[in-house]
Length: 325
Ligand SMILES: C=CC1=C(C)c2cc3[nH]c(cc4nc(cc5[nH]c(cc1n2)c(C)c5CCC(=O)O)C(CCC(=O)O)=C4C)c(C)c3C=C
Ligand SMILES: [Fe+2]
Ligand SMILES: [Fe+2]
Image 1 (cartoon, rainbow, N blue to C red):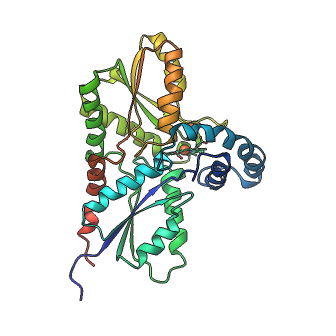
Image 2 (tube, rainbow, N blue to C red):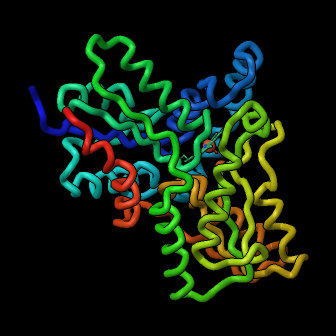
Image 3 (cartoon, protein in one colour):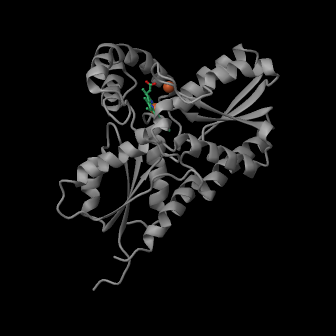
């Protein structure tokens, strides 16, 4: 009889990103991403012609130059920060394996689970999305289940669905903002910007919007902000349907007229910086705000590969280390 604790493997899952900032690589990435019925929930017969005849012909040519503005020597920021974060978790030394996988592109969830199955007795799946949505977390869980359904011996599997109100996570983001303000001073308002979602997803039961609000309120409370010192908005709208409001860029354009000219923006829904934070928030929306009369616009980076971030995730994973083999 084995009375010890199980060897625990961790799979950190992120969205995925193109392999290069070129229209061809972006097209390949978008084809896989936007073909996922968890992401675009309209009937395939309607969506397929729009995707193939319109979106995949136009969007790669527009998104590739945006990717180029944020690309690093080591590759896409989303991949590079996720790799560095994995290294910090592995350095903790208590997990038998720590791997990263991308929901779209490489390294795939399937390939990493195949590696882990021979090395550990327990696998914990931790999508790097603090707030749950079916389009992101739900889809990552789909890919795990699709993989293991052909296995005879499935190991203990645990899914962490969200960590939107984890005290360690809220404090990690709050402490980032506090240090930023200590160094650079305070703005008129702090704007929390989360990735948007079609309004219909919430109507169908996605807890995402409520979780974003709880996260923002929790961080604001830790910073001692009153309700009129912070704002919440949703960014990165895609397509023509109604998405969660207020739309970030629309709000930014209105603020100077309301006398709010100095804004700091933080994106707690993004575990690591990526196209949507570094290009849309830090470059494009900054231009929009300044053009509308704003005088100061500062983006506070994501937790990325910081020790506070690793400690946040380790805190979520620690209970699984105590499970019996
Ligand atoms: C943080 C959570 C995210 C949610 C929720 C989400 C929903 C969602 N996204 C799209 C469409 C696109 N998103 C794109 C990029 C992108 N999205 C997230 C995260 C969430 N998406 C990240 C981290 C990124 C950046 C990827 C990177 O390579 O850095 C893109 C591609 C970029 C572009 O062409 O603009 C699209 C398209 C939908 C439709 C959706 C919910 C239904
Ligand atoms: Fe997205
Ligand atoms: Fe975007």
